[in-house]
Image (cartoon, rainbow, N blue to C red; front, side, top):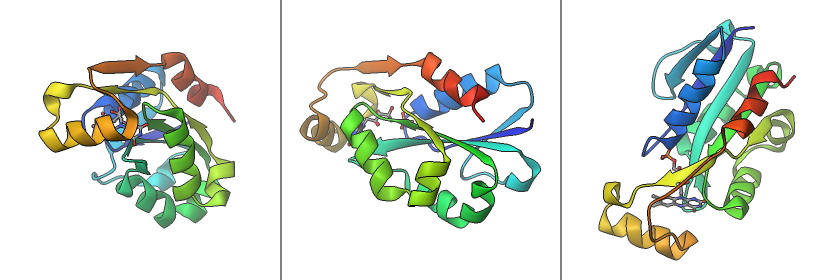
Length: 151
Ligand SMILES: Cc1cc2nc3c(=O)[nH]c(=O)nc-3n(C[C@H](O)[C@H](O)[C@H](O)COP(=O)(O)O)c2cc1C
């Protein structure tokens, strides 16, 4: 089965998850959402996004809207990096069309923040939004594994 792994990332954690999946799969290709690829060549699509300020990546939402019809005919997995489970659930329910939401297998693989990579404003937003004030990493590879075998 040919698997297409797509991702959008700001600080690299979602890319790390995408690479983890790519390393585990035998017939897969991996692209950033901004690159050029043809989803028709693949049987299964695994899409990675992040959540910032309660929102999923715009590119991921646009991708799901643009390719809705094709995606509903394929196996679809979504991994969505976040540090707050409620934000993860709310953002997915708010941004995904119900058909996609119920068709896809969706997982939370964790999230990561390195304060030295953030500017003053992002640090302030992060503290206000989810009260994170120190470097944090939660990575759940066993949860990503659920995207490898599902039907
Ligand atoms: C400015 C900022 C805002 C964030 N907002 C949220 C949020 O609203 N909810 C949440 O669960 N995580 C939030 N996070 C945590 C990110 O989802 C987490 O860092 C994730 O790993 C980012 O993925 P990336 O490294 O692929 O960009 C935020 C992180 C930053 C830096």
